[in-house]
Image: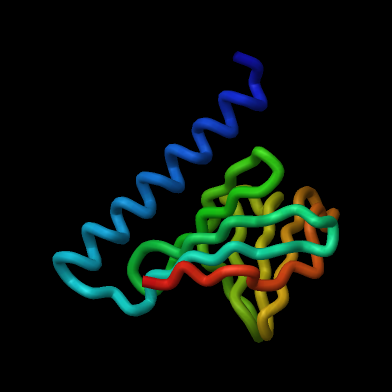
Length: 118
């Protein structure tokens, strides 16, 4: 298996575990703030976004065979999530999102294609 395939499988496992966790939480104690979305970006790529944790403090992002576990960050408007070292930024505002890596937007013009809200 090459490195890209291994990352892809790892991302799918993380997303599946996250979905299972959300289902288990739904069955035991409803959490109306737990949400998951599929976004379509202007590049034609899709981005999976799952918000988790109390008050959606974590965002799990999967796009182009890469996966990111980001923490909520301070934002004047919209929802902003960053990686531990700040090199990855996901920002959503008014239904549009982008993903930035090392200061460069790697996906932009992303809009909800499907809402998998509980």
